[in-house]
Length: 319
Length: 278
Image (tube, rainbow over all chains, first blue to last red; front, side, top):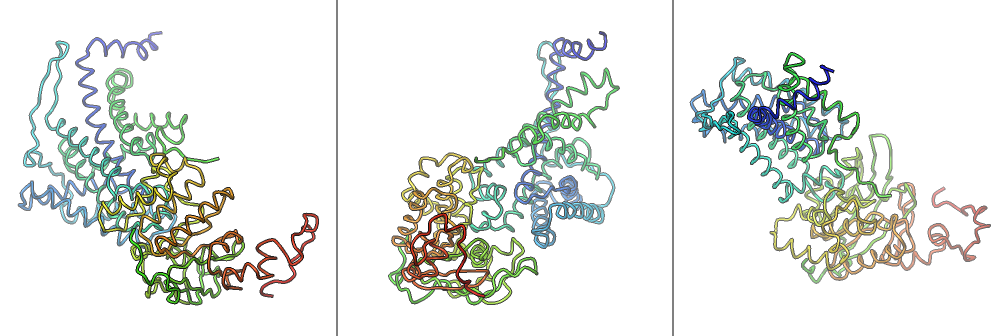
């Protein structure tokens, strides 16, 4: 009975007893959640438009962050380094399309997947060669990201919101909204969605594969830079940063590889749930550190009941 | 959509000419063994033949979509508006006015009907207003699409999908539409409706059509000229009116022989009198 009580009742009693702490946990969860959602969006866009599972998304985060910090170290002003980094990511997208994707078009999916592993290894080596392998510090202040914090006292308790987290959340939400608007309203966005639906038909109406591919890889690069800045500001810029992309995998399992909504909702859900689980169940009962595996187990359980993911694109079948 | 210049009805200059092409899939499977055909500017030409005769392959060779299926034109040449097709990407071809409506509609299922239509304008550079005008024009030809503009195309009926596919092609401002099996899976009345619109488009807009059809009967009523394909070769061609009267065409494709219609009991024992190529 004690055991059941500690699983089923005590955590919720704790939440009610200290609502300020609960809010703090939810906020922390939201911050990582929007980042997961953002990264997952990068995966979804590339997958939808080319059926490629982009293993290199994680290393692109590192590469973008390294380029940004590296440029700044070489004496470029931080605010100028951002557009320059974007330019580098655009060049990277063009290069990947030319050198990797175009020659491999029409090959089985697994070959393209292997090719993205190749891109990963290349970017690790290339990044080290140019920027060195040692850890760097994200140039948060130089980018004019505020580093102070706000404190609130809800319910007579204490809630701390760091300004850089707030900036990250607002930035990420803005980026997601811009992406959604782009996908649903613009001509290029429509072409990306069309390509995801029917490759052949997209070709037949004259949609150019190369253009779209460069575009989605560039978007993935922009997302990588945004994530790199935010995550780098919390954890430092090193090659270990690519783990954040692997945290997006359960989000994809949960949300479905093809669903934009799935990526967003899945990201937020996993971000928040893993924090809740860690603090109310993990630490008291399992000795903590559950965040490393919670998302995967959670996705696994969901997949048992919904193999297409929570938001897997509905297969339209006419009878 | 602007009217074509006056010489559109001049049937002497072909807008498309296919010269003795050979197509090989996967480096081994020879599908077309020397197909030649011409489509005059402003004409409607039918490409007829049974399943697997090579109609779709011919159309895809023309729109340069073969590459995506590991097919290759290994011999011969396809000339559209004076330029070799093989040197152009599908994207360029659409921009220059040659677009294919694929067999089985191939609508973008998760996009709304209107978004489907708008994807057709991808290659255009003449501004949003012109595209809006053409959208209205497509809705005039297909009022049913206007009613269903916001529904996901995947949930519309087969006829509506065929209309969407044709409308989508129209949005690219084409001079030539390659129409693959428009009658497939549609009720006879709808087929008639679709072909009627093809005729209107041809007359009003001067769009040339090359249509691949198994439904020989209807295709020869709307087309002006016809080619009959069998096992990757053109075995017969001529004016549609002549083909309709041709005894062999009647027997093999229209289902009537010299002695009139056969009863079902006879059909069981019915054998081809001769093969085109033996």
